[in-house]
Amino acid sequence: MKRNSLRGVYKTSPRVSTGLARLDRVFYAASSPEVARRTLGKLLVRIVDGRRLSGVVVETEAYRGPRDPASHAYRGKTKRNEVMFGEPGHAYVYFTYGNHFCLNLTCEPAGAPAAVLVRAIEPQEGIETMKENSGKQRVLDLANGPGKLTKALQIRGDLNGADLVTSERLFLEPGGTPPRVATSSRVGITDGTERRWRYFVLGNPFVSPGRPSNRPPRTHNYHRRPRTE
Image 1 (cartoon, rainbow, N blue to C red):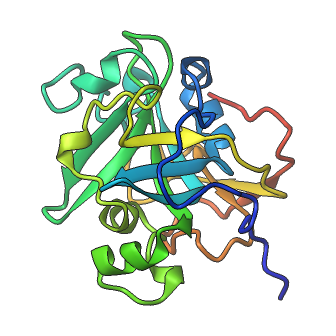
Image 2 (cartoon, rainbow, N blue to C red; image 1 turned 135 degrees about the horizontal axis):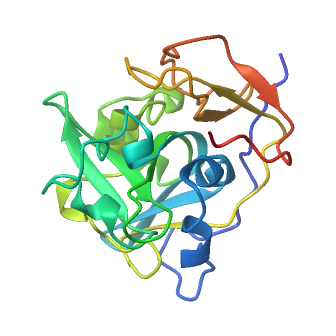
């Protein structure tokens, strides 16, 4: 089987470089389903001790606050989810299931709580460090799930609220265009299962093994604007 991968697109140094392009505030201000789709193929970068750890985003999920019963913000603002209510382009990091953190990207205008969960990346830079962080040796197992990728990249609660546009520790850079994108219902939810707001690079081996909550995956033309309701 021919591997559908984005590896090799990036020419960045494994050490910190100044002046690298990164995604701006406007990118995150769109609807969360749109941001979730457009985040595929972007490079997620974590700076640790002056070195870059990075990976191509290959799987995401969108959440939309009061419009979405699966969202943390569905019932309103709390201390835990308050980052979602601020300006777009911030990290919303929370601890879940008592054992791992999840990374979300806030989006939509301030006051409209919405976020994109980063579910999986294809490691690019700092792979040996990711192996040490995760305790795993197979590259395929390093970041093919939301808890795995935060462990591999050392993303913890201290990064909650980090500004992805200005932070020197966590941000996203422009990347390639995935050849094919598929959608499905989101993983591990019981409400809002009718919404196909999980997006992933079709055929990429680094996509998580998580099972959609409802319906089989559907393939999309990457350039076609997805439905948001």
